[in-house]
Image (tube, rainbow, N blue to C red; front, side, top):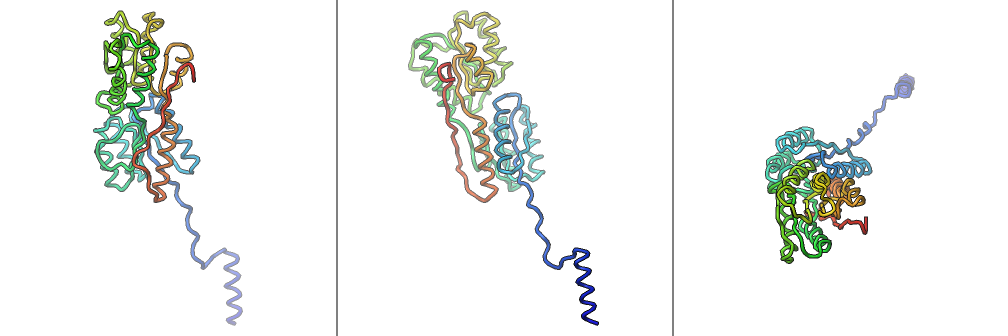
Length: 304
């Protein structure tokens, strides 16, 4: 009788698929990176986002991108959302290096590692910062401008966001070179907040105040392209040489068209791809370098 019951029990197991072995482990959840970016109105950061997404897909991880639209308050709220979503790593391109500190500390308290790109956080614990040598970028532009101008001329500068480390370094690097050439005079140096629209508006005022002008140095290509617009409208493109930094697509086309002289390629896609690789390493318990500097190259009509 016992043997008969045993055969019935085995039959039921086969029919129903019941198993008395330990349950199969659930599929491992997809790891997630949160990317808090200052603005996607700037093509530079769009390229950065795309580079990060491509690398994340390659590594089999998810990347959530939130656009702060250049608002520190909005970025703070978005980082809070990423923390609440319990992402594995947060990559931040701060709108402001001081304003982001509180958010970085919140992430620290939540045990979420933070990586910063292009702009640092002036406080909190950041496991890695990726950037370029902004001072070197300014020097590259200055050296090219000196050569193009034949070591003499009047120059206007369009500065980035006031107080931003990148703007300060791009200014200081440029001026380190220019100070060695007494026949090059900086006649105007005004903030245009890394914006194409502000670059055009500020450049209009510069042109009105400077009937003689030989060159413009913009801390980024967006402002340089704004300057191109204003200079063309004033019919002064033949006399004014325009330089920028970033090598965004529009700037490359402007160089090809003879509207800009040079820019500096800082490889935003590579920068973000590297940040995503670092985030992946952190998720796997690996240590990463605290500072990563992305290489630069001057781009002009000769090597475009």
